[in-house]
Length: 409
Image 1 (cartoon, rainbow, N blue to C red):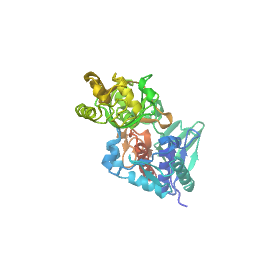
Image 2 (cartoon, rainbow, N blue to C red; image 1 turned 90 degrees about the vertical axis):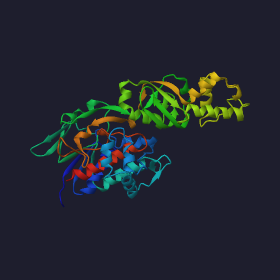
Image 3 (cartoon, helix red, strand yellow; image 1 turned 60 degrees about the vertical axis):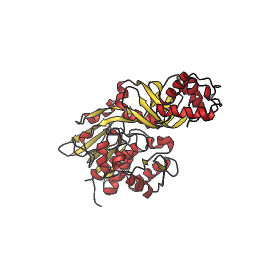
Image 4 (cartoon, one colour; image 1 turned 180 degrees about the vertical axis):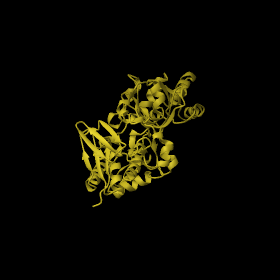
């Protein structure tokens, strides 16, 4: 049998498995080994999307697809030309994972469980005879210029590989990337992205579970703005509108030490002038009704009553009895509602980072390091991160596919 290269994959997550499978599909005779430091494989896949795994997004236009990445947009525009959402959908469906597209463009397995994706990967690894070594942390990576190969040092054991693909994921601290920095790579300091906003002991937290589908949220004093569903939680605010804001504002909000104010328009982008005209219509047609009994807005009665009380309007007040002063307060509460944020909440299992290996050091056509020949990167270890909606997994599939396709040469 023809003998191929030995290729080491450092990291047993989504990107690691996809890269390993890509190597074997393009170079069947290669010897592929996945090194995972823990005793768990694909742990992030398991918990992602609430255990359902949002594998990708339905956006097929490459330019629009790339616009969903606060960091890595231009790099991915080129990479998506080689492997994009269309290819991802075909990849999974051809390997026994039928997919379902939701109205918001998110794509999940028809089974509605991440286990389908995990089973698919484990099955592919078994079929392709890919070796997996769990509880094998790579403490040091050495490149031999003379032999043009790598030594992967794990505790007392040294493994020799011709090529290496690093798929260690996002690192919460800079220290987790120093082993790559010593090889000469530029590291963009990692910061959390995709997190929720904490509002300690704020009265709105009593409305936990309330969702408003169409909102506009701004960070006061910045140009940061986001649209989409907003979820009230027992610690503050979450939902796509908040998560997107945290992604686009990752560095700005970090510089503020996560102490800032947001302005919420509960009525999406309805302006104050239009709302005042609408009020006149409500008073004309429903003037005799109590404000608590007539809620003309797409929000729960609980939230409506909260905003009325915040605007100092008695719940027994009739619409026609609302004073000019109270009306001004209510208009402001509906379209310009201010909340002070103090801190953030990240979910460790689904942790997403901004930062990582600088894209300046990586060849987009191959995912190979421009500093160390034979070393490749894929997934979130790169300075790439997307907003919520399947985009982070898509970046992982794309970069892993390309790295796998290139590493066996």
